[in-house]
Image 1 (tube, rainbow, N blue to C red):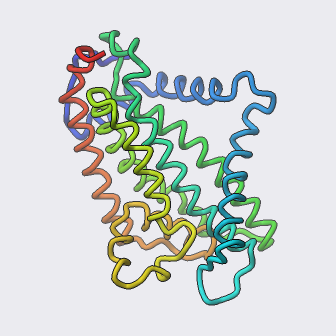
Image 2: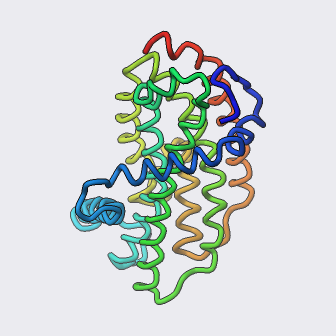
Image 3: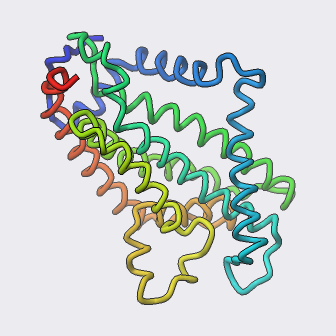
Length: 276
């Protein structure tokens, strides 16, 4: 741990520098977080596979069987519908876990705040790393399902890391912002939970963007997850190349949000100890 808690650099390069400076600590805490999550349970890490599958089956029953929601006019099978939903659901789970946990990051790590040598900014990396573990598990499930249904895998899945690279900075920015705000305003955690619940239905997970009435389609496209969900389906299900231009713009905006969130976190971190 080379950086002091008093080091409140707001430089964009410090975002990356902090990862390199504390990579061993980050990796160790991520592993500890994942292990502690399932410690004491009979099935252990197996629950990381079970939980998303159960939720997927529930939503599949509601939207595909009860409401008879379809992605297009073609009569895709229920299995294909499940894949399309799961691809979008995978992105949403990753995003929502980071957002919902961020407001309590500082509040649940008071002991770290009191340690002058602990780099508080890496707490968001721990949350993101834990969410990355779950999304990788979900991708494995998606790969297995693809093989069972289509007997093959689209080669465009190799671009999955690109999707993550443009999404992660966006999530980090909001995580730093919410971690700071949640320390001073305890209601932020409740707002985050409600917001992600609303966002789930405002994201084209269970339906295509084209199914939205023209007058509302513009607002759905403003949803930061809409592009990522669409690109995830494109490479993982349809075998299409990513929309490089859209991902580039998204990536630039994501890094801008990351720096804004990091800037706010660094400017307010010295006040954490005063409210804890």
